[in-house]
Image 1 (cartoon, rainbow, N blue to C red):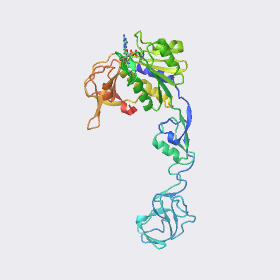
Image 2 (cartoon, rainbow, N blue to C red):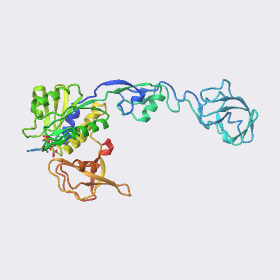
Image 3 (cartoon, rainbow, N blue to C red):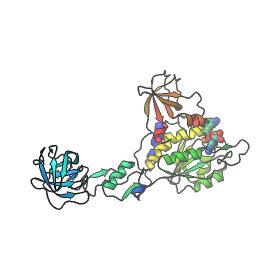
Length: 401
Ligand SMILES: Nc1nc2c(c(=O)[nH]1)N[C@H]1C(S)=C(S)[C@@H](COP(=O)(O)OP(=O)(O)OC[C@H]3O[C@@H](n4cnc5c(N)ncnc54)[C@H](O)[C@@H]3O)O[C@H]1N2
Ligand code: MOO
């Protein structure tokens, strides 16, 4: 059995971005940028006023002085002339500061009369003027590639005059649930049957990671059915299977896929839940075989599939983020498998996060997983740990899960 870290390293090393495409700004949110976005203009393009008021020469605009108002400069309508000695030009937020002016007299600090304005508060030179290029200059890089685009990035790219952006393609992930006993939610159940929750939970995880799930029809526990279903997945950037990963004679995934060009990289890892993880390639298509137990499938989804989706999406390889907390209760010594305990997270008044592992950790218990928002990591062979000692947790909400 290999370690979690080695398994993740081997998985991520075998993946690359699914390619790039060009999308309009309205489709760019949450996509990973594939090429730098450089400003196509300078912002602001010239000196502009930050306030409504009067563009003036600061030297003239002292308290008690009267200035002659010679024109107006609303945003988008520059004043053709300049501001001479003893003059003022009415200006509005975003309006271009006319030649000769070096300060803005705020409307609130002025008293307008017919063709004139009285200065009630002395104007400081440069005050309330946004200099040309204050935000950015033409040619500067606004957004660097390899970044998942936020609403802020999209606003910035738009301001830089980019209607289109080059982004990484959304990876398409085939999800294949296997097993004679499983049926789709809502279908009649055979005796001993179980509703397939894995494909749906994994599809939601795939979506949360910004990729596109393709849920394939359930494959029965027979070689031909699994093989045929896998053939349908050749168009995917990654095929995820659940179930049939273990050692029972009905656990057929590897056996069924062999004749379809499956080559194994590794099988079985030192992790709980999730021991019988499979990683290999079905022809060109990478294949991640997750265990059938619902909690194992989803926890392995967090620890391996999540980072794999990031790499396929054009992000750098990285483990899921771990946060620091303290244990809410004593924990026993761990064995050789890295453990991910379902744990409840709460915050103390002083801000400290406390993670308390659930009493029941059976890998079939979806409700325990749904009710506990964190996975508490226990390193292989970790010694017993007392309540209050530091622990590391994956906070599922951090991943949108
Ligand atoms: N003798 C051994 N038995 C088992 C071992 C072992 O090492 N030696 N490993 C155990 C571990 S750990 C796990 S995890 C499971 C995983 O086995 P499989 O991946 O082969 O999963 P199945 O046997 O197909 O199913 C296990 C369990 O999960 C249910 N299941 C399957 N698919 C779904 C689905 N889509 N939605 C919901 N539930 C599903 C299935 O009905 C079974 O109850 O093996 C242990 N055994
Ligand atoms: O690893 Mo299994 O996933 O313990 O139930």
